[in-house]
Image 1 (cartoon, rainbow over the protein chains, first blue to last red):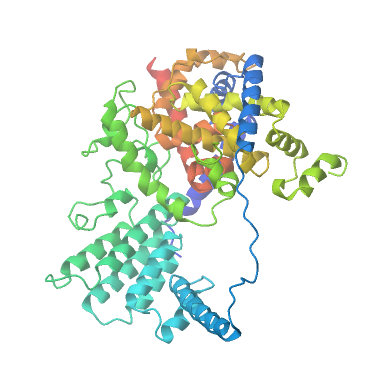
Image 2 (cartoon, rainbow over the protein chains, first blue to last red):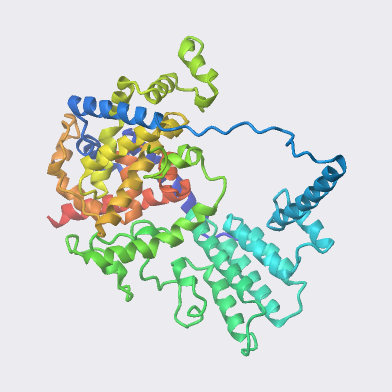
Length: 360
Length: 204
C-alpha cells in the first residue's frame, strides 16, 4: 500500500478534530483546539433555534395524532385466504408427473436466469459459472464486465477492477488490451485515493463510470481503430486518481480534451464538498463554502470566489441548477450500496415515503 | 428489565408489534401506546421532538416551518403502525420524514431555501453563566450569516447534529450518507463556521 507522506499525520489530526466535535456537540467543554470558540454558538443555537412547543400546541397535536392513528387503523385490511396445499385439479397421476416434470424444468431455467445475474461473492455465482460451463448464459467477457459494473456499484471497486482485468486478459482484440491497460491504471490510482470515505465514494462512482463505458463500448468502436475507445478509457482511468468533481468523468466523449486537471473544479459546490479531501481544512475549502444564495458556484468559469456577497440573490435558476447538478452523483452510491447502516428507514420503507402508505 | 416486565412482555408476546430493541423500556411502552392511539404518548413524542424538528426545518429554509412541522408529525402518526425500532431509530425516522417534507416543499416552491429571520422563532432563555458575555457578543445575525456561507450538505449535517441533536449514525441514516461522509462534512462545516465568525468579528 502506498500512502501520501502526510497521510498518517492527517488522519491523526482528523481523529482529534472528530473527538473535539463530539465534545462540542455534547456540550462538554474543550480546552484549546480550533473549535473551542464555537462553544457559545452551539449553546445559542440549541437554546434559541429549537422552540419548545407550548402546552396547548402539544395538546392540540396529541388529539389530532390520535385521530390520525385511529383513521389509519380503520382502513380495510386485506387478508390473504390460506391456499390449499394440494390443488384439486382432478389430474391423473401420470398427467401430474408430466406437470411436475415441466415445473421442475422451468424451475431450472429460472434458476439459471437468477444465477446469471450473480456476481463474484454471491451465493449463486458458482452456479452461474457452472451453467456457463454447460452452455447456459454466455460466459463472455461482456458478461464478466457487466458483473464488474454491478460489483463496483456495490462499492467493491478494487474487486470489480480485478474481475474486469481478469476477464479482459483472456480476450485478444486490440480494444481489450487498451481497456485492460486502463483498468490497471485505474487500480493503481484507486490505491492512492481510498483515504477517506468521501474519496472512496468518488472513486467508486468513477470506477463504475469506467466499467460501464468499457462494457458498453468494447467491440462496438467502428471505423476509428479503437483509438477513441482507448482515449476514453485512459481518460476515465486517470480521473480516478484525481480529487475532482465526479460529474466531469461521466462523459468520456468530452473527457479526453486537454486541460482536464485536478485543479480544475468549477461547480464543486454544495453536495460535493469533500471530494478534494486532501486539502488542508480551513483554507482548501473556498469552493465548498460559497454563500448560500450566491450563484458563483454555478459559473462554469469557476473563479474560486466563494466568500463575498452573502445576501446576493442567485436567482431561481441558480438554485435549481445546483441541486440537480450535485445531487445525483452524490446520492447514487448510497442508494445501490447494500448493507448500509440500518435503522428505521430501511426497516419500514413504506413508512418513510411521504404521501405513501397508510392513507385511508 | 424484569422489574418493568409486564408491559414489555405484553408487547413482546404480540408478534405483529415486536419491539426491535427492548433496551429502552420507557420508549417501548410509549411507542406501543402511541400505536394504540394514546393521547399521552403522542403528547410526549411531540414535546420531545417538535422543537428540534421545527428548528431544523426553519434553519434549513422552510417557508412555513410550523406548518411543515405539524405535517411531519401527522405523517408520523399516520404511519406509526409501520415503524419498529428503538428510540434512536424513531428519532431518525421522524427526521427522515421532516427532511423529505422539506425537500418536497422546496420543489413545490421551485426556489432556493431562504433561512428565515430568527425573530420568527420563539426564543428560549439564555443560560446565564461564564459564557454569557461571549453569547452577547455573538449575535444571532452573525451566526445566521455564517451558517449561510456553508454548503448545502454541510448545513444539512450541522442542522441535524446541532439542532436535531442526532448522533453521527442517525444523521448518516437520515441523509443517506456514510458516517465518514457526515464526519467530513461536519469537520469542514464547523471549521468554516468558526472561521466565518472570527472573520466577522475582525471586520466589524
